[in-house]
Image (tube, rainbow, N blue to C red; front, top):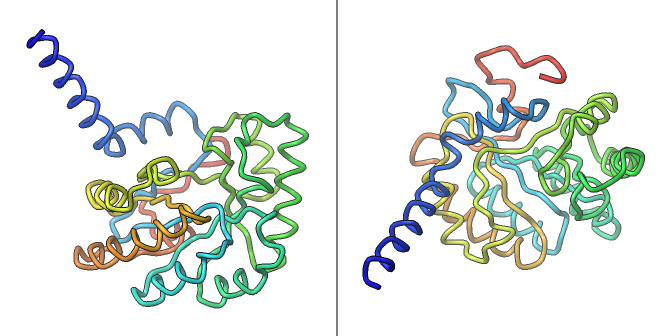
Length: 241
């Protein structure tokens, strides 16, 4: 039995190492296999993009406070059904110099929607969020997408954006684990994904309180997605690539 336990422990360790270091090697493979979405930005500038999904919520004001204190900026991918009654919060996002992104009308896997329903949700969300400022980016719910979805996104004038540093903060209720994962994997050009919402938003406040000072100590600026994209050192791929 001892050797079985030993093999099992080694297997768990290997899985943990692979999962912990995945952003360093897996993202580029996924981007090549499923083109059309931005995951990272090739840049020589010491900067990373911060993106925050699923807002606005009762925690967004606290997230904004932490960002303000740390002189950091982000792209907030908003769910349009969360906007009603929180218009002031969305205005605060914009007035603080952050960027708005389209994260559809509801928190659901976009890839499960029929093409017509996906386009309807995308445009409905864009109409709501676009009242507050320019919206350049769309992030499909659930992170999965098809070539048809990319075509729909680009015809509507958006660019699809995912990320390269995702600490599973929507699944694992540990701010310390999320913080350690981000700090282990963030590099110049990385796109970090965190979440707003109820408990998720509270964890993001705590995570940002740990991560932002540490990134600043490394000399990494934390900027919006569009600001990072303007720092790219190679031409942006043409639509569909």
